[in-house]
Amino acid sequence: MADLATLAVLAAGAAEHGGHEAAEPLMLGVASAPQIVAASMAVLILVAIVLKVPSVITKGLDGSIAEIRKQLDEAKALRAEADKLRAEYAARIAGAEKEAAQLVEHAKHEAEAIIAKAEADTTAVIARREKIAGDKIEAAERAAVAELQAKAAEAAATAARGLIAGRYGVDADKAQVDAAIAGL
Image (cartoon, rainbow, N blue to C red; front, side, top):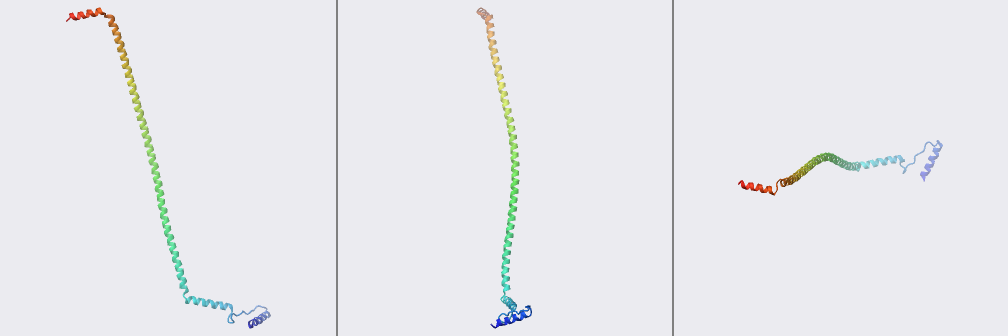
Protein backbone atom coordinates (compact mmCIF):
# COMPACT_ATOMS: atom_id res chain seq x y z
CA MET A 1 0.00 0.00 0.00
CA ALA A 2 2.91 2.24 0.61
CA ASP A 3 3.78 2.00 -3.03
CA LEU A 4 0.39 3.30 -3.99
CA ALA A 5 0.80 6.23 -1.66
CA THR A 6 4.20 6.97 -3.15
CA LEU A 7 2.76 6.85 -6.62
CA ALA A 8 -0.04 9.17 -5.62
CA VAL A 9 2.42 11.69 -4.18
CA LEU A 10 4.57 11.52 -7.27
CA ALA A 11 1.56 11.96 -9.51
CA ALA A 12 0.43 15.01 -7.54
CA GLY A 13 3.90 16.50 -7.76
CA ALA A 14 4.01 15.90 -11.47
CA ALA A 15 0.67 17.62 -11.89
CA GLU A 16 2.00 20.68 -10.13
CA HIS A 17 4.98 20.90 -12.48
CA GLY A 18 2.97 20.66 -15.66
CA GLY A 19 2.93 16.88 -15.95
CA HIS A 20 6.16 16.65 -17.89
CA GLU A 21 8.15 14.78 -15.39
CA ALA A 22 6.93 11.47 -14.16
CA ALA A 23 8.75 9.05 -12.01
CA GLU A 24 9.18 5.62 -13.42
CA PRO A 25 7.76 2.88 -11.30
CA LEU A 26 10.26 0.52 -9.75
CA MET A 27 10.02 -3.24 -10.19
CA LEU A 28 10.43 -5.18 -7.02
CA GLY A 29 11.44 -1.86 -5.51
CA VAL A 30 14.95 -2.16 -6.98
CA ALA A 31 15.13 -0.92 -10.56
CA SER A 32 13.05 0.39 -13.39
CA ALA A 33 11.68 -1.85 -16.19
CA PRO A 34 14.34 -0.93 -18.81
CA GLN A 35 17.06 -1.64 -16.29
CA ILE A 36 15.53 -5.05 -15.51
CA VAL A 37 15.27 -5.90 -19.24
CA ALA A 38 18.91 -4.87 -19.84
CA ALA A 39 20.08 -6.93 -16.87
CA SER A 40 18.04 -9.92 -18.06
CA MET A 41 19.60 -9.70 -21.52
CA ALA A 42 23.09 -9.50 -20.05
CA VAL A 43 22.40 -12.56 -17.91
CA LEU A 44 20.95 -14.41 -20.91
CA ILE A 45 24.00 -13.58 -23.06
CA LEU A 46 26.36 -14.68 -20.28
CA VAL A 47 24.45 -17.95 -19.87
CA ALA A 48 24.59 -18.52 -23.63
CA ILE A 49 28.35 -17.93 -23.68
CA VAL A 50 28.93 -20.11 -20.63
CA LEU A 51 26.79 -22.97 -21.95
CA LYS A 52 28.46 -22.77 -25.37
CA VAL A 53 25.21 -22.11 -27.16
CA PRO A 54 27.10 -20.61 -30.10
CA SER A 55 28.88 -23.92 -30.68
CA VAL A 56 25.54 -25.74 -30.57
CA ILE A 57 24.06 -23.23 -33.00
CA THR A 58 27.18 -23.49 -35.17
CA LYS A 59 26.93 -27.28 -35.17
CA GLY A 60 23.28 -27.06 -36.13
CA LEU A 61 24.07 -24.60 -38.89
CA ASP A 62 27.01 -26.75 -40.04
CA GLY A 63 24.66 -29.74 -40.19
CA SER A 64 22.18 -27.70 -42.21
CA ILE A 65 24.97 -26.48 -44.49
CA ALA A 66 26.20 -30.06 -44.96
CA GLU A 67 22.67 -31.22 -45.78
CA ILE A 68 22.21 -28.34 -48.25
CA ARG A 69 25.61 -29.13 -49.83
CA LYS A 70 24.60 -32.77 -50.10
CA GLN A 71 21.34 -31.77 -51.77
CA LEU A 72 23.22 -29.40 -54.10
CA ASP A 73 25.69 -32.16 -55.01
CA GLU A 74 22.78 -34.51 -55.66
CA ALA A 75 21.14 -31.82 -57.79
CA LYS A 76 24.41 -31.33 -59.72
CA ALA A 77 24.70 -35.08 -60.24
CA LEU A 78 21.09 -35.24 -61.41
CA ARG A 79 21.71 -32.26 -63.70
CA ALA A 80 24.81 -33.94 -65.16
CA GLU A 81 22.87 -37.18 -65.65
CA ALA A 82 20.01 -35.28 -67.27
CA ASP A 83 22.46 -33.49 -69.59
CA LYS A 84 24.06 -36.82 -70.43
CA LEU A 85 20.66 -38.38 -71.18
CA ARG A 86 19.66 -35.33 -73.23
CA ALA A 87 22.88 -35.60 -75.26
CA GLU A 88 22.35 -39.34 -75.67
CA TYR A 89 18.78 -38.87 -76.87
CA ALA A 90 19.85 -36.03 -79.16
CA ALA A 91 22.46 -38.36 -80.65
CA ARG A 92 19.84 -41.10 -80.99
CA ILE A 93 17.46 -38.69 -82.70
CA ALA A 94 20.21 -37.52 -85.05
CA GLY A 95 21.11 -41.15 -85.76
CA ALA A 96 17.47 -42.02 -86.36
CA GLU A 97 17.04 -39.06 -88.70
CA LYS A 98 20.20 -40.05 -90.58
CA GLU A 99 19.03 -43.66 -90.76
CA ALA A 100 15.60 -42.54 -91.98
CA ALA A 101 17.24 -40.43 -94.70
CA GLN A 102 19.36 -43.42 -95.72
CA LEU A 103 16.28 -45.65 -95.79
CA VAL A 104 14.44 -43.14 -97.98
CA GLU A 105 17.45 -42.89 -100.31
CA HIS A 106 17.75 -46.69 -100.43
CA ALA A 107 14.02 -47.01 -101.15
CA LYS A 108 14.34 -44.49 -104.01
CA HIS A 109 17.23 -46.47 -105.51
CA GLU A 110 15.29 -49.71 -105.13
CA ALA A 111 12.23 -48.16 -106.76
CA GLU A 112 14.35 -46.86 -109.65
CA ALA A 113 15.94 -50.31 -110.03
CA ILE A 114 12.52 -51.98 -109.98
CA ILE A 115 11.21 -49.53 -112.60
CA ALA A 116 14.28 -50.07 -114.80
CA LYS A 117 13.93 -53.86 -114.46
CA ALA A 118 10.21 -53.67 -115.25
CA GLU A 119 10.96 -51.58 -118.34
CA ALA A 120 13.67 -54.04 -119.44
CA ASP A 121 11.37 -57.00 -118.77
CA THR A 122 8.57 -55.31 -120.71
CA THR A 123 10.91 -54.65 -123.63
CA ALA A 124 12.08 -58.28 -123.53
CA VAL A 125 8.50 -59.59 -123.38
CA ILE A 126 7.50 -57.37 -126.30
CA ALA A 127 10.53 -58.56 -128.31
CA ARG A 128 9.73 -62.22 -127.52
CA ARG A 129 6.10 -61.76 -128.47
CA GLU A 130 7.08 -59.99 -131.69
CA LYS A 131 9.45 -62.88 -132.50
CA ILE A 132 6.75 -65.44 -131.70
CA ALA A 133 4.28 -63.52 -133.86
CA GLY A 134 6.88 -63.30 -136.67
CA ASP A 135 7.57 -67.03 -136.36
CA LYS A 136 3.84 -67.76 -136.50
CA ILE A 137 3.48 -65.53 -139.56
CA GLU A 138 6.43 -67.27 -141.27
CA ALA A 139 4.97 -70.68 -140.38
CA ALA A 140 1.58 -69.62 -141.74
CA GLU A 141 3.27 -68.34 -144.93
CA ARG A 142 5.20 -71.62 -145.34
CA ALA A 143 2.01 -73.60 -144.73
CA ALA A 144 0.16 -71.45 -147.27
CA VAL A 145 3.00 -71.87 -149.82
CA ALA A 146 3.11 -75.62 -149.19
CA GLU A 147 -0.65 -75.82 -149.55
CA LEU A 148 -0.51 -73.81 -152.78
CA GLN A 149 2.34 -76.00 -154.07
CA ALA A 150 0.36 -79.13 -153.19
CA LYS A 151 -2.72 -77.77 -154.94
CA ALA A 152 -0.61 -76.71 -157.94
CA ALA A 153 1.04 -80.16 -158.07
CA GLU A 154 -2.34 -81.83 -157.83
CA ALA A 155 -3.74 -79.55 -160.52
CA ALA A 156 -0.67 -80.23 -162.70
CA ALA A 157 -0.99 -83.96 -162.13
CA THR A 158 -4.68 -83.83 -162.96
CA ALA A 159 -3.94 -81.79 -166.08
CA ALA A 160 -1.11 -84.14 -167.08
CA ARG A 161 -3.38 -87.14 -166.62
CA GLY A 162 -5.96 -85.48 -168.77
CA LEU A 163 -3.37 -84.68 -171.46
CA ILE A 164 -1.82 -88.07 -171.34
CA ALA A 165 -5.18 -89.77 -171.42
CA GLY A 166 -6.16 -87.56 -174.33
CA ARG A 167 -2.97 -88.21 -176.32
CA TYR A 168 -2.44 -91.73 -175.57
CA GLY A 169 -5.20 -94.16 -175.69
CA VAL A 170 -5.20 -97.92 -175.27
CA ASP A 171 -4.04 -98.34 -178.84
CA ALA A 172 -1.17 -95.96 -178.43
CA ASP A 173 -0.12 -97.78 -175.31
CA LYS A 174 -0.12 -101.08 -177.07
CA ALA A 175 2.01 -99.73 -179.88
CA GLN A 176 4.53 -98.28 -177.45
CA VAL A 177 4.73 -101.54 -175.51
CA ASP A 178 5.29 -103.49 -178.71
CA ALA A 179 8.00 -101.06 -179.83
CA ALA A 180 9.70 -101.33 -176.50
CA ILE A 181 9.65 -105.12 -176.64
CA ALA A 182 11.01 -105.17 -180.18
CA GLY A 183 13.83 -102.88 -179.18
CA LEU A 184 15.09 -105.38 -176.75
